Each structure stands twice: as C-alpha cells, then as structure tokens.
Image (tube, rainbow, N blue to C red; front, side):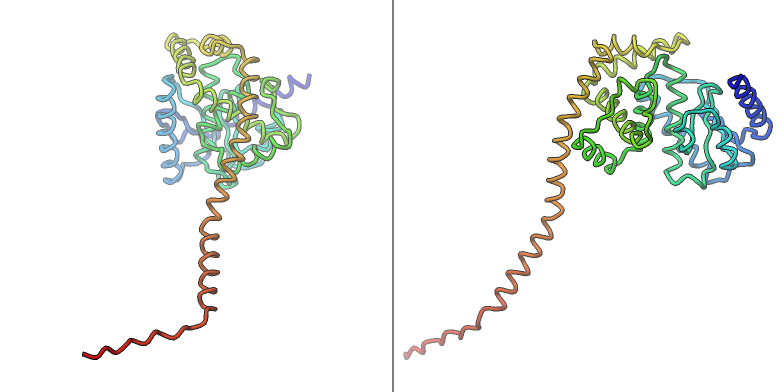
Length: 301
C-alpha cells in the first residue's frame, strides 16, 4: 500500500514539474527545465558543460542523440520533496539522477558550494550510463561519474592514504548494488570507486578500449550493452577476480602514496632548510673577529 501511495505522490510531482517547469534551454546534449528564464552566466556555464559532454562521448566513442532532461529546482524544500522515497544518500546530495523518471534534478544552484559544472557533469554521466548499459554495478556508476567530472582532488587521496593505513577498505564487490550503510563510509566508497575506474582505464588500456567498442556496437543497434557480459569478454576475467586484483593493487599503492607524500614534504622543506643554513652561516661569519690587513712591503729601487 505504501508503495502505491509513494508512486502516486511521485506521479503528482512529475505532473507538477512538467506544468510549472517549462524548457528554458536546449544544447546538443541537454534539455534544461526551470521555473524562470536562465541568466546569461548560467546559460554560458551550461554550454561549457555541453562541450565537456561532447569530449566525454568522443573519448568513449559512444554517442547518444537524445537529450538529458535537467530540472533546476526552485527551492530546497521542493528538492527534498522530490528526494522523498529515494536512498538516504540522495537527501544529502546537491543533485541526483532518477532512473524511474530518467531525469536529473538539481538543488537551487545558490545553495551548492561545489563547482556547479562538476555536479551537473556527475549526474549527466549517471543518465548516460543508464541509457547505454544494463546490470551496471554501483561502483562503476559512481567511479565513472566522479572520475570524468574531476571531483577527486589531492585531499581525497590523502584521505585514502590515511584510511588504508588504518585498515579501512571499501569492498566494491560486496557493494556492487548498494551504498555503504554508514555515512562515514561514503567518502571512501566514492574514492575507491573512482580509483577502480582509473585502474581499469590506465592499467588495462586495451581491455578498456575493447569494452567501449562492445558498448558502441550495441548502441549502434539501439541496444543497451549488458555490463557484466561486456566486462567479462573485454577483460578476460570475472568481476570477483578483478576486485581481488584491484585490492592487491591498492594495498601496494598506499606505500607509493606514502613515499610520494614524504618526498613532497621534503621538497617543501628544502627552501626552509636552505634559508636556515644561510642564516646560521651569516651569524657565524658575523661573530668572527676582524683581522688586520697585511702591510705591503716597501721595495727600494
């Protein structure tokens, strides 16, 4: 009964959005809906995002003709209402993609502290993957979205280093279709997912290209590619064995990060050490007594 009520509420909300959120902008890849016309700066940002999406599709070689519906929600209260019944993590997000409505919903941009273009790119990638793949693990969804929206900075990798030495790891295979239960585990899950996608792309380039060629072939036939079958064929392994391999890779990686971190710290200290050494030398020279200059011998001619 509760499910039917929730479905009815969602249908009412969808009808409300269609009536009060007219389309305000169309780009090559996006259909943007908002309650009022977009500012010039916002429209420019969306066209820049469109360029990012073009480059993203070109890199993977998988192209979509349809436009991703993006709803710029007017108030935080309306956004929370739309998040009703979704997973807990959606309630704390700045935007989310709904697979039920096949649409992207975004908080009022003024309340989003993160780079707006990165947030929208993240959600677009969720929409994109949902249109070209089936059976897609959650870690691949989030890893692709975070990797290609460039949301992982140096601080996140320091966090990975800290957590790995504390013995905390994110079991991506176990979390293939669900987020970690504890909120404090969410950052590590996102970071581990991003690193797994980077590992697939950078350490196994031939397999990565073969995977996307399979997906592109299915897309040209107007079919979505099954992720698991495509992965097994392109990478010549199972997802379980891949995760074991990735776990070994990350265990070695933490020592590399530690080595790089120590070297970076020493490099930062080098100018300070040289300055201290120069000042010590200067003080020692100043403390030396003044010696008389030698007298020149007079030579008679």
